[in-house]
Length: 159
Image 1 (cartoon, one colour):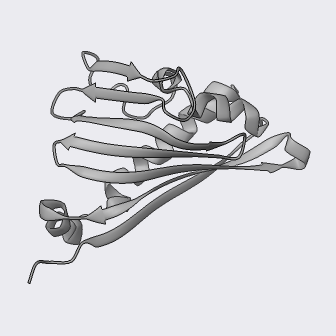
Image 2 (cartoon, rainbow, N blue to C red):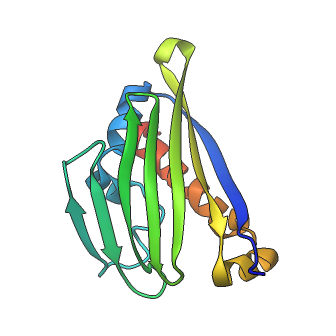
């Protein structure tokens, strides 16, 4: 009997003093991710390509980088302006994996501020199922999510 996949979920939240629409704009355009994504500095020589519309549903992004950056693709599968963005994330290297990404933008203070929640969910299969018992996805990417959200905040709400 094969081993059953093991589900996981990683989520981080930050408050940004800006309306949801301003943040939504950064999330639905993969070209803008270079300004805040926690993984952009991992490989300065990384190859990137974009497909589909410039932003919104159907936009796609692929990357192929060094060992630390790996390779994979993302596509925006849903966007509810300015409240939510859904992304299909696929890693090809170092390990194949399919993940669902969701950004929730909850307005506060009459729309002057936004609680941004970045969530990734999926299932550990194959080798990742075994590694997941030793190192949780939260430990693997939680700090990256925190870094990315902090960089997004700095971009939108400079101190």
